Length: 386
Image 1 (tube, rainbow, N blue to C red):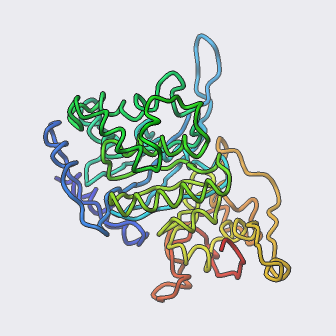
Image 2: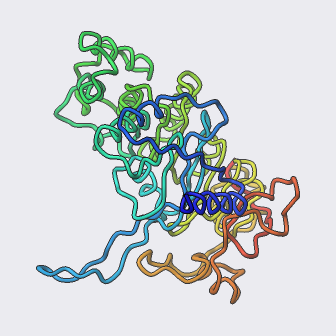
Image 3: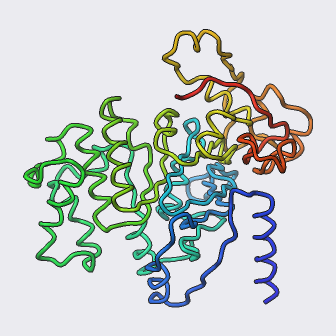
């Protein structure tokens, strides 16, 4: 009981420090049947369906051939917390290597977390295995970055989209699976007659539609999109993004949308989280992040976005970051962005900034009053993604 009370106190303290995360109502189901019952429970729109707390993933660095010895660790994800609400899209952006895709794999339990918790409907899925984990994966699906390598070239489209029914036979009776696959092809805008074709017979945008159809097969509640449009042409990107928005309304889906393109993320996302070197630097609504950024890293990112308006482009300030991105195997002390930040002071090297509303904006109902992990957070006018 004492341990449970301490955990609740720690959770409440975290909620107070970071308004972006809500209190977790933990459901400790002891049997597989109880876990499945919890996972099948409905969640009201606007309520948190996925709650991530202090998620950590360290990949060990070893020496030796026969007798391996760990000499360090790559801190790919190092204490990430956020909530995903039913029916919303949470965008995650950041430079290559900041840990975005690792977060996606941890949420799918394709990688096991070093520490931290992922609560799906109050159930910590990082500790599940076997049949209980299989039930979770039915409700949380993924669309991968490369629409070609994520599809088996030896399988027809019908077999690819129908494969989830082989793994979860309860989702569709055996005699109706072919019909269900044709319906899914029609839902994503492909001709159902393409069911016997192979992936190489489709364009990049069509292949990504096939990947989306496969993700929809089991009627999931959450779809994690790991840069789903980065390998596509601009016109095709717009088609796929519009399709995903249409499907979200139709099937009441919640998205975690990972991408580099800040314009696309703003278009599709309700809230946006900015990651840097394994940590969340800033998080808020799309308007708060894009029009009122307070973290220097977010401001630098937005200043690099191409602007189609020549007048706006000529008058804006371009923020050039000096130095290279530090190694995740040996990140800087304190604030991880301090080695490239123009605001860095001694405090930045000594204290890790919390992801919370900056004191200067505390108690104010203005767009700048959102969570930012910076000791000296302040607004800066940046012409960013439209």
